[in-house]
Image (cartoon, rainbow, N blue to C red; front, side):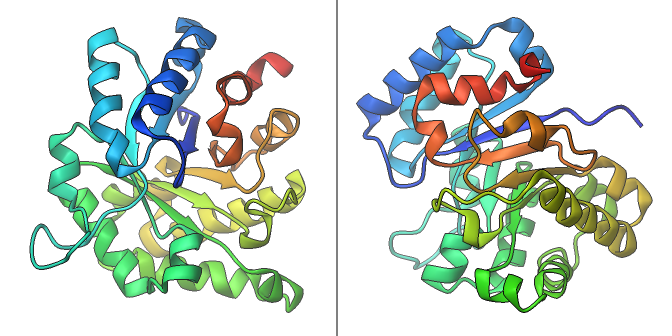
Length: 259
C-alpha cells in the first residue's frame, strides 16, 4: 500500500466572520507553496456561515486546500431547526466533516450512536469523516484511556465496512489537552494513536488499519508539531487555536522543514 498522505486540519470552531475567514485563507495561500501542498493535505473547517465564502475563494483562486465542515446532522433533511445535513455540505464541495468532536460530545451531549450515524451519512454522500475520539482528564487519571478510546471506536465505526474505514481520518484528541495549553508527550500520543490503529485492525482488518489516517489533536503548535509528526502511527494533526493565525498554521503545515 502507498504511504499515507499526511493531513493537517484547521478547526476554526466558532471564530471569524466571513470577511476575516477570507483574509485568513488569502494570507495562508501566500505562506504555503506547491511543495508544501505536495507533501501534506491541508483541510480548512470554517463555521457554517463561512463555508460558501471559502468555497468560492478556493475555486476562484485555484487554491489546493480542501474545504471541510465542523459537524453535520445524520438525517438528509427534516424538522431539525438549526441543523445542517451532509447533502447540503456536499453541494458546497465540502470534502471533510469532523464527527464527534469532544466539545460536542462533552458539552452538547452527542452520543456514540449519533456520531456513528453522522459518520455513515458523511460517507453516504461521498465525503470523508474525521472521527474524533479521546479521554477526559478523569479517565486518564483512572487509567481508562484505552477502554474509552476502544469503546468509542467500536461504537462509532459499527456497521462501517473496512474499505470505508480505510478511507477515513481518525483524530485522537485527549480532551484534557484541548485549549488548555497541555499537550500529550509525543510518546503518549503515539501510544494512543498506535492503539487506534491496532483497534481498527482488530475491528475492520489489516487493510483498513494500514489505510486509515490518524491525527493527533490537542494544543498543537509550531513548536511541537515536528515531534508529533515523527511518530510512526501519527499521520497528521487536528489544529484548533493555532489554525486561526496564518503564519502559525503554515509553520505547522511545513513541519517537515524542521527535520
